[in-house]
Image (cartoon, rainbow, N blue to C red; front, side):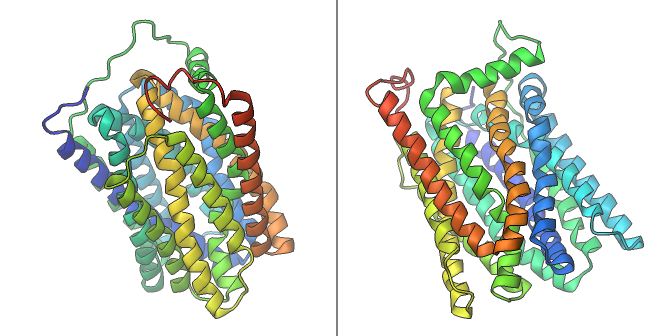
Length: 415
């Protein structure tokens, strides 16, 4: 499947293009969320913004995964990136000429959510077509490293642009990123995907085949179940970061961007470890450890006092939170890429997105009013404790039920 001689060059071009695109997206996302936070000071509004951004994942994930397996993955990535860029450009033009109400941001976030829903399973499925199987953990580490670099610089660029220019100008960085990412993909020839002879053309049947992948691999099933339930608590936290800085710690946008930097720094450290010295044999076990780390660090964030020195503690804990996020996601992604048939990989990743995103909107709907009444720090603490309890319960149940059995994948790859 991979061309042995030049897979590194191809992978680097694709990964760099995606990182540049994310750089623009993260900058715009930070500026938009901070804009909403300043205009409304409402956890409910920020929760709704996250809801409209994630709701397309719930609705379109099954179709997106099937599209990634049946259509040209390269075309899907380029079309999705450019559609999101054009959406940002149109909104920037309207915002330049008109004083648009806050709710119009929701429309743009929804359109971006649709684009991301189709783009993510396609790009995740392209990587195994370019990279040798034994290199997937390292290349996923490098992908996360580049993404973390974008996540690190994006808020800084977003905060600087937001301070210097109106939102209509800030939005154009998203357009530039989309063009560069699409150009990088156009420059790379993706190996042709060999379709199975028994491939069904019925969309419902194909989606059921995607679900079957998780039902047959019990280790993967229980890990994904834990992730989905934890997402109910963890997902909304990202929407509340600006208000933690601006309202709880009473600090400016630059401090808000520094928190994002801290989270990204943790991602970079863990990505470097995965892409260089770490050799992970038991991927499922390491991914569970990442979930525990997410829960513990989220709970700690909720008990930090609202003092100036407390913000520095909060930023340090965010480093650990970012590292925990990668410790969970990198081994999980590599495990799926190694164990799932290439022609079904798009469906597998879209089902993974769907399972998680089904709980995300519910979490936002419940967490936003709760956080508004009890305080954001209380919700961080509740979320962290809940994640630890959920992960412990599911892991304990799996060990009791399947601990003495060998999964059929054990002979192929150690989890």
